[in-house]
Amino acid sequence: MIVELVKVVLALVTGTYQDDDFYSYLEQAQFINDGTTDYSQITGRSGPIAYPALSSYLHVFMLNKYITNNMQYYMPARIICGASHLITMYFLVKIYQIAFKDKPGFANLVLALCFSFISIQASADKIFNDTYTTMFCVIAIYLYQRHQHVLGTLTMSIALGFKMNAIMHIPAIYLITSRSRGIVVGTLHVIAIRGP
Image 1 (cartoon, helix red, strand yellow):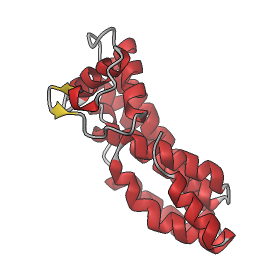
Image 2 (cartoon, one colour; image 1 turned 180 degrees about the vertical axis):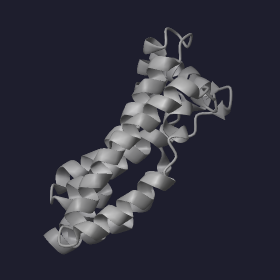
Image 3 (cartoon, one colour; image 1 turned 45 degrees about the vertical axis):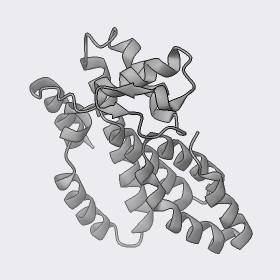
Image 4 (cartoon, rainbow, N blue to C red; image 1 turned 90 degrees about the vertical axis):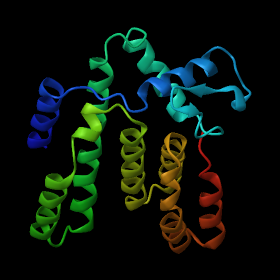
């Protein structure tokens, strides 16, 4: 984790901010903040809103707009993205420690490979909804692993509110919850993952 912290700090200090979709997300979030409820009217620099029924990212990007002083200073938002990368890595370590508790050497090898291949650039150099989606998906996986299925489902719903690729976890979530709690409860968990 210390190496990851150093990587984040170096990315923040030496990296340059790359505005892929951040400005567009902020524009879209402003529409919601101004009271627009017709999603066909919500657009940004990169086009119309991509996830009209899901709003997790709109709330986070409204916060980002505020902390960046209306997009004048990007560093606070980059720090938040770097922190969410570190949170993701923390829970990733916990997941592997639990999964390989009988083989800690193997867990350490897998983690070393994960840490070496995961790019910090996506977290600190780009302010993008993937950072948050990944963080909430990893936290949800950890919660499911700890048999905290309701919290896992709520957390996965938040992840889905950032980006639709979180939906790819649903088959595994169904298997986990239905094997642990029965088919009906497993089905209810899948239905409950709808995004805030």
